[in-house]
Structures are given as structure tokens and as C-alpha cells.
Amino acid sequence: MDKKEDKGSRGMSAKSAKKYNIAVIPGDGTGPEVVAEGIKALNTASAKFGFNLDYHYFDFGGERYLKTGETLPDSAIDEFRKFDAMFLGAIGHPDVKPGILETGILLKIRFALDQYINLRPVRLYPNVETPLKDKGPEHIDFVVIRENTGGIYTGHGGATRVGTPDEIATQLMIYDRRTVDRCLKYAFELKKKRNAMNPKYAEKPITLVHKRNVLTHAGDLWYRAFEEMGSKFYPELRRDYNHVDAANMWFVKNPEWFDVVVTENLFGDIITDLGAMIQGGLGVASGGNINPEGISMFEPMGGSAPKYRGQGVINPMAAIGAAMMMLDTLGEAKASQAVETSMIEVMRKMKSQAAGKMGYSTAEVGDLTAKYVSEIKE
Image (cartoon, rainbow, N blue to C red; front, side):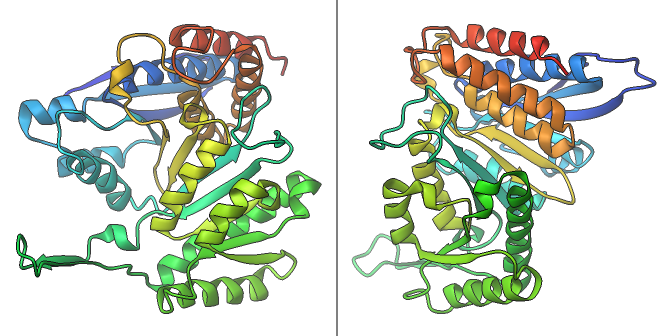
């Protein structure tokens, strides 16, 4: 496979500094452009806080598929296991039928590397516009934990009588107790951590989202597991439950009610896009595909946006946010906080988070963020 290496930025001597090996998949469309700006922030942070980053680039995506017919070989999965983290730009090409790259690359990585948590912060930063009237940063600050390897995305089901008026298609929402429990445990532990960080978080419950009034089997499993784990191991934490349709309404009307939200795969896919919109759009929304015991992958949520490719107008802030999340997961909390603080300073100066309306080019946003990181006093 095509791969190239970049030693990145050096903060201390190779003998004394901790080193992280990062697999980078710039991907399609504007993915390489935003990844480049995320790398700027990472390099500045690593130099400032004294650790090393070695980047290994992989060319998986639409262009490679169109040339070779290959999405992601099994050998790549074996190689990814050797890294400390993965940084993804975007997957999606206008000349490739929808589903091929998403299933062949994104879902394959998530399932093969058992990245069973999709972590999606929903935070409205200062000077970022939200479509919600009379809501500000003090109202929109929560995180959605989406179960990432089970449910309807596992592909169980099929189709018969295809192409006839009697065609039947099925796709099943499948969950076992182990898969549910490990996702819930991650959510409860994150809630404990957030409560300790800030008293305002402790005032809010951890919220399970499902549709147990209709999905009486899968929904009942999630609800019973949630209640049993909470009452037995986390009795000090307040618990709440929302049907998914109600959660969508409350995200818009009262986002300040939420702190940690946990849900299954399909519902999580839907409500996190709503979360991204209320935090200012996909240009500022970042996410992590987390394996707490293995390798995790971080990405901006805006997609490949091919119409903006090569124009230097796409907002890289979500990619920089993904880099910030990666640093935190690697254990570099001070570096992660420095990147987020710098992001906030840059967003205060931007005219908009929309592509082409930022008041800066893509590269200028990255340069300015890196500059602020370098100037932060430790």
C-alpha cells in the first residue's frame, strides 16, 4: 500500500520524550486540506509540551478505489493495530457509489478495531452562531456517546423478490448484553469524570436515549442494563431516559438539560448530526471512534465537501478539534487543553464558521491556531 512517513515536530530529544505513532488517512475532497491544519496544531503542541509524533500517511479513499478497485485490505487493519491513534480527514467521493467507501473503509475500521464508542462533544464555543434562538455557550455543552459497532449497522438481514412488487428487505437491530454493558460503562465513567470537573455538570443527569415503547426487545435490553448498572455501581449519579423523538425536540428546545447522553448506533448517528448543527454546524463538529483498550480514530464530521476542494475556503476547525480530542485520549491533557484554548481564541476572531465566510483562508485558520498554541504559558 502507498504510505509515507513524517517525523512531525520534536519537543525534546528522542531519548527523553514520549513518542506516539499516528496513522493518518487524509482521504477525499477537502480531507487532506483540513488534516494539514490539524497537523499544524499537533506539531506545535508536541514541540511545546515535550513529546514526539511520528505520522504515517495512507492513501485509502475514493481516488485509490477508482484506480485499483480496492477499499481497505485486511493487511491495513493489521498495520493499524501497531499505531497509538488514527487521524482521518474524510471519506466520500462523488464518482463512487454511496456505501462502497463508507462500508469498505469506515465501518470496516470501526468493526475490525473494535472502536465501540463514538464520542461526539456538542459544545457551542463563543462567537459561534447557533440556529437556536436565545441559546448561548452556557446552554449547549454536552456529549453524546453512540454505541459504534452493533445494532442495525452490523448488516444482519437481507432482501428477497428484489425488483418485483413483492420485494422484501430486512435489516435487524441486534444487540447482546456485553455490547450494551461496555458502552454504558464508558458513559457512566465519563459522567463521573465530568461531574468532578465542573459542578454544573453534576447538576444534570446521564440520559439514555432509545425507543423502548416501540422497540420493546432491544429498547428493553438497553433500559434494563442502564437501570441495573446505574443503581448498582453508580447510585450517586442521576439518571434519565428519553425516547429518541423526544430527545430531538429537547436538543432544540432545552439543550441545557443534557450533559452525557448515551444511545445505540442508529439513533446516535441521527441525533449527533442534530447536535452538530446546534453547536454551529459540521465545520466545528469533531468526533472520536474509541476503543478504550486499543487504537482509536479521530475525525472532523463535515465530510469530504468535494465542491470546496482546492479552494482554501473550508473550515478546518473540526479537524483541529479532532486533533485536540486525540491528544486528550493519548493522555496529553495539557496539550489538548492548549489546542482547545487556541481554537476558542481563533473562533472569536472569525467572521463565520461557514466555508468561504470565515474571514480567513483554511491555512490561515490553521496558522493562527498553531500560533496561539505556541504562545500559551504553561
